[in-house]
Image 1 (cartoon, helix red, strand yellow):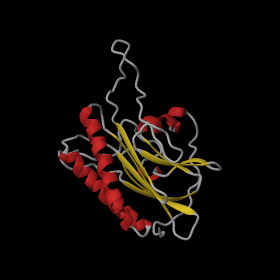
Image 2 (cartoon, rainbow, N blue to C red):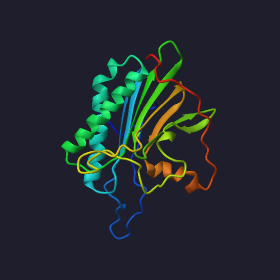
Image 3 (cartoon, rainbow, N blue to C red):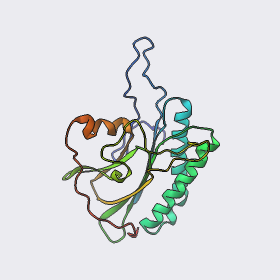
Image 4 (cartoon, helix red, strand yellow):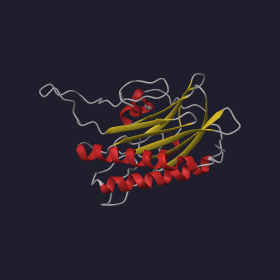
Length: 229
């Protein structure tokens, strides 16, 4: 692709700062933006990854870039070997291990990471959505009949502390990541549904505590992570 900023009907994304503008420097607080994303869309599957560097600065952004690059690179190389969604989850876990090694190799700091794989299920008209996340970068599905539902809801308490990401990749103790809230999530989606990932800069603004409204999470139906691709 020669025009990375050009929108596409199938997949798109945006990274933007929601911090205040400094009236003296005319720059946004918190620059550079440490939110990083990547989308790889194919006819029968899609890889979506998003990372949010913990704290501010170039090392934070480098951590997010390293995490997304490592996760997507690994999945791009090995996703074709998966025959069911259980295999996809194994690959997602290994992609996070590779992302961690990329962060350490680049001497970056900490970052959240959320990576999702959408794959067409064999013999059905549905798609499997496999998600692995660490921290407070979350995954959602929009359905025209049921609205928005969070898929990664198991990775945090309903009344969560927005000052703490809950976990992160990178050298948390000098080398190892903090995987306290690492969560595998699975659901099925249908043609026309929209899968999207957000950092806490977006999702926190729609949290019931912030927006002063009741939690709008829709009902969750049981699904099994052994569906054939």
